[in-house]
Length: 406
Image (tube, rainbow, N blue to C red; front, top):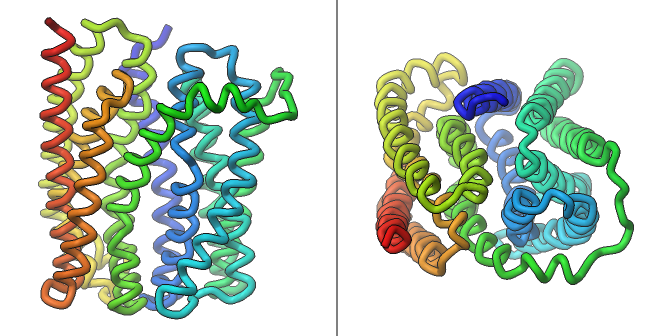
């Protein structure tokens, strides 16, 4: 059996390769579309992602928890998640379009609206299926799936850049890549599995309490990372969204390491006994914190020349945004370990409250202070809010460890 360190390294390498493909799409859209249309492109992708998070109901977290404990539940869980992804994703896409329409004038024409109807369910289904792959302890399959998804996006974006480099074509390329990735993930999981056709209400109810608590935390965490896009959409311009999208792409890439650790850590903690769980949590927390502190310092030194070289001087305002987001990146990395530990313990209410307070704090400060602090100030507010959540969850986890050790 392979060591856990090897599994971590393999998955991290795969996610780095996947992010390189994502960066390829970002560079192509940034260079070909310019800041304004790059902002529109990113706004549409963000609408789909927010719709996906709303429609997920935390099912991917509860699925991981259930399948990690009882792998025989896989066939029915696959069927349930397919129904939720298709129906819930479509409803969430409509909700996203309504939100766009009432938030200051619609940014979507008919084609882009139809794109959203397909993109939201397909990205949601891919999220569900890849989490099931991890729950089944099949890291190699997971790695292949995320690399395929990223490669498909990059190749299709490159074709668009050569043939017809416009906003609609780039968005359609993203949809095709998403659908293809979801279909491949379904084929990988369904191989040799006899799938029922009907939705199992009883199974859904068995995990709904855990799922809803996870849903609130995951949704609010995601909204905190994307909230400024909607603030800028409302009070700024699409050029500001374009600058922010580049900074976010960079900070999202920096979070590959903690998200990879968290993805593998959670099912491992679920399976572990109490003493092993506490020990693994503390060790991972110290090691990841040290690595991310070094990573953030190196990024702070190199970001300006690298960003201007890769994306061009037109995106220079993104440099200051990255600087302001770096403290939040470190805090989110630490938070990810504490979150996985608390999730493995059954998702205590304090974990949910931390994200509610953090998201509320960020929303209030961003809206009230935007006229005074501007685009870069929003990034500092985001980092401060992430720090508040980080401190809260660290205190909660340490108290829980001491309680469990009594």
